[in-house]
Amino acid sequence: MRRLQWLVTIPIAAVVLVTAGTFAYIHFVNGDAPAPLTFAGSEVTTPTSAGGTTGGSGTGLDGTWTATAGSQAGYRVKEVLFGQNTEAVGRTTGVTGSLALSGTRVSAAEVTVDMTTVASNESRRDGQFRGRVMDVADYPTAAFKLTRPIDLATLPADGAQITVPATGELTLRGTTQTVTVNLAARRRGEHIEVQGTIPVTFADYGIPNPSFGPASTEDHGQIEFLVVFAR
Image (cartoon, rainbow, N blue to C red; front, side, top):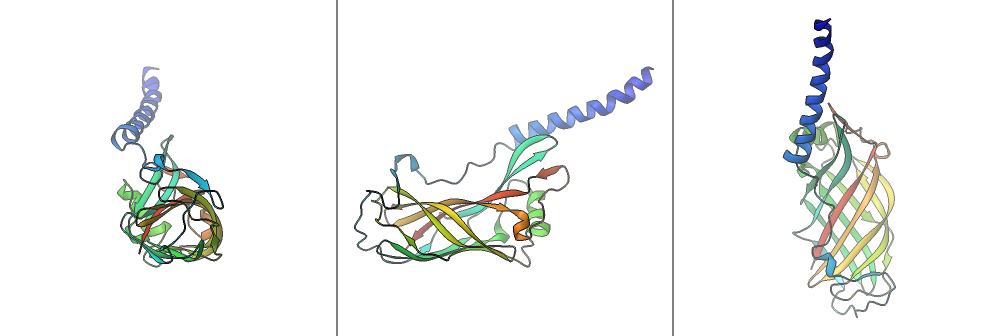
């Protein structure tokens, strides 16, 4: 009877130790997932909507603006590791792109992300991401291209923020889908900053479910980006 008790107790103890160890690793060693990308000092801006009363003549803003240092993009996916809920977040500063502004009209915009440089805080996850999941050897970039001009009605004053819908083509792993996303944008000195998230269902882009080993994920996630444009 005592031997039977030990045989039952050992696997239960092993499960408890694994769960406790995973909890400690996620919450104390690995730390919390990075917060969503937001504008630096965004608490001092004044949110408005396109067509609102925030002013700005637009003089000197016309032309082509190019993505610069400070731009970031990446993914966020909910993950369960040995029963513990966490978030997998990978990011890169390998972001290029441009937007064309004339008066209060954004006539064109395109952003490209170097998927080979996307990294998280877990090397095994990154190996899966670059290999089986996103196959960066064959599909080294992801991109968003505006397909419908954006009419701002008025330009925001320096330091103010607006939210506008943008429709375009999102390309991931060689598959392109039309998406509409709400973009937050603001002028800040000599820069135009654009931030947003795009929900992604993996099957829509032929992306295998990222689950691997003891880590399981949902069938969807989101792309996060913050692009800083300058001329």
